[in-house]
Length: 392
Image 1: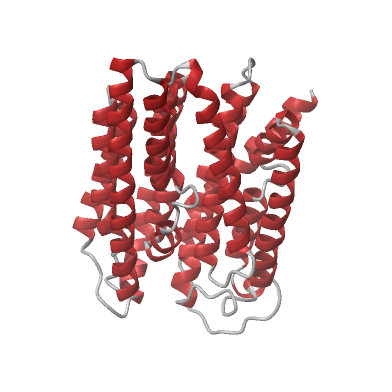
Image 2: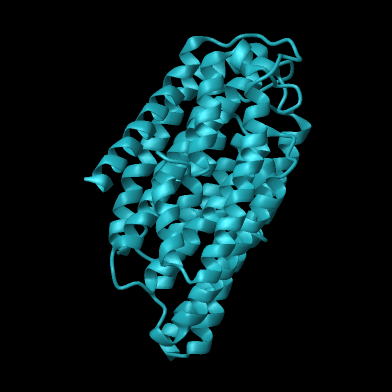
């Protein structure tokens, strides 16, 4: 299944890159025009963006664990400057936080990789377990799993919208695939420990995401914590799929990864447009979108509904599959946390969409709606098609 998952990500990652590259062509001129301070040159931005894409593809195509480690480290080095596109104090702080925390995580992953390779030569189950623990902590840092997620909210909120979308929609998937490859090498005696560790971090990630989404006042940070939550769901689906004899959970895993990546890309691009219009990420200021920016209001509210897994979202089917096949205590815990997530996101979504505008804004060009609008149509059509396929 590892090769199938790799091939799936080799298709999904270029799709996400093209969508965000196209959005960059529309977004950057408007961002530059409205910026009060300095910003990165567009030539450097596009050069780093292509290097970032190449590093992610390299991580998926790497033939060995050491090469994969090099590729994941490269994604950190080439994506970090993109976070500081706006040249602000906050973006610089977010970049250094991203570099520091992810570098520590990558160091853990390197040590874990060395332990796993050593275990292969000795056959020691203890070394396998120790190696996987370090790998899970290391690559889990880049994947955004709690409690190693602390770089993610700052980086996602400070980066320009297309970069935030790539960090959330594509990079986290590549880091997850690194964990998948190492888990594949574990002997049967070590698998209960590995799967229990992934399950524990998955539940913790959903809980942390849910807690920090409650009373969230920054709409881009809200999306960042949503990524933490969904990475928790991904790692839980993976741990359950490994112990399942069928293929249903593997399909649910692939469906969840694709749906989350595309929906989060739509949402981050829409959030970037709102930031251009209102020049703030504060939920309390961005109000009355249904009156002032009707197209963006529809994208924003429907996108939030879809990312929460409400029908006809594709995430509904993957989350339903997780709940149906999990032990009762996992199902109950996940359902309770997902309800908290839904309540928190709908509170923000409804607050921003309805009511009267409380701040002046500068409208954005209609072309900025093209890519997120196309992604929304794709998601809705795929969701409706899935509903008819299941009913039939």
